[in-house]
Length: 184
Image (cartoon, rainbow, N blue to C red):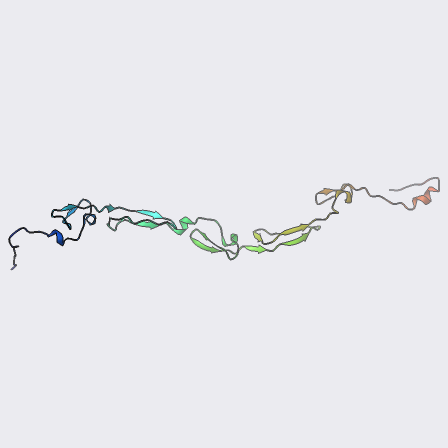
């Protein structure tokens, strides 16, 4: 069997001075007995439905109020924030970059500078896909002029204009005769 107890004479209920809540601590749309009020009070605490997404470096202020635990703020993936097409071979050695969410350390081939002289054959001074760390100089020659190149001959894009002077030291001896013949 159960026992039932009845409150003594007088009114029942809560003593407002025993309550610690304020209207700001009671959810909007609900009433409660709160400190300092003899009658129930309408709550003023907002019901937050905060949601969203964040990128690196962003933040979100959590708004005051009631959160029911079913909402979330999600960070976007690093891959979605670092789109790219670079590979390790495209990045300077020892340098790093984030590409599609992955940290990539550079392995690009490098080459120092240098001085090169033109010759009779093509020279590849800097191969493809290299980073040059110094000046690449192809030496010129001040004597490479049209006047120093035989007429009609083209050297490195310069067409010669020089007509050779032919010394014919034997001609004076022939000129003592009445006839002289030059054969081509």
